Image (cartoon, rainbow, N blue to C red; front, side):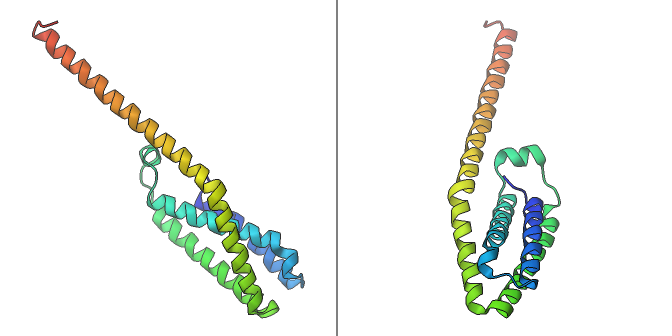
Length: 158
């Protein structure tokens, strides 16, 4: 899955393309691919931010806790600024109805990403969590069995 830093990078490049398109007078329909890329990156950022708040067990064991809260906060502010600027540019040049169209495109992107990528990632995280849990349980049972064997052998029962 995409991390917040990569999502912000993708959103920034799409944002720059949108700003350039608006400045040269391109029609909003001509920029739908850039708007959808920005919407996808924004959606990916929100998903990644949510996952960093409640990471899967295997990720928290593997990576530990970073100071990602500060990074997420800074990236969140950058994403909000981009959103405000896109809204003001589109509303200024194309009117408020165009911003409603952008919101519709963004909602569609979020729905589509949730159906495709996020559901797949949730399944992968669930499988990994169960695998790690089962391996931990089996390791615990094996260690307990080995300790009981050693205790029994020391007492002469085996």
